Image (cartoon, rainbow, N blue to C red; front, side, top):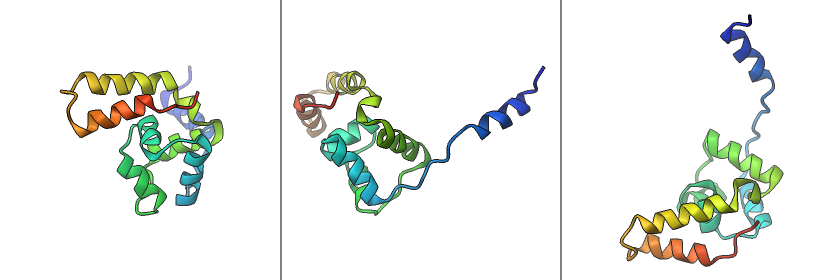
Length: 116
């Protein structure tokens, strides 16, 4: 029987290192997807302001966000699932009065043509 520690040590060897992404690379990933900062933010489940800060190099993506960005860079935005994002946007609108700025933004995103 293999110990839990041995399995963990071996499995870590298979994980690829996430490269540091520059502001230009992050902007390029979004441009290749052909989406606005707000749509890109919805796919990544972050704020539009954070995407803007990444693209201006005011902030760096966290470990999880950087891993997600590297996956999108390699596989395209569609790997995150258009259906999931649309469902999330509808859910956000349902749980609000529908009159706030955020709901208006979510409605605009629903009308945006999202990549497949």
